[in-house]
Image (cartoon, rainbow, N blue to C red; front, side, top):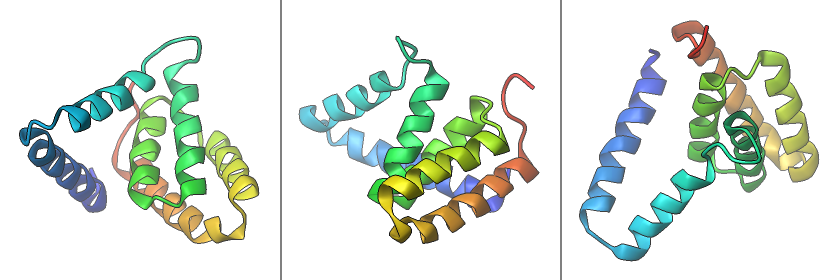
Length: 120
């Protein structure tokens, strides 16, 4: 796995552990609700992750973009699908999303170079 992917995953895990260790009921419920939202339902997990990626681009949250890129990759999103997702995010979010798109493509390329999506 690429260095920036490993760093992102390690940091996210470490900080989530610290946050959840504080035993705040509201935060625990929020984290659980987030996890439950992306489970299989009327929409597939893949579709939900693609929606999460668009929302993250529009909200300009690079950490969220990275997380959803990883999840999209794991769900078998193709490069062509990715660029359609990025197109939607840029149309909805406007040109201010372009820098986030650049970083998203860079991170996606690292995913392509260093890992294989599950199911392949």
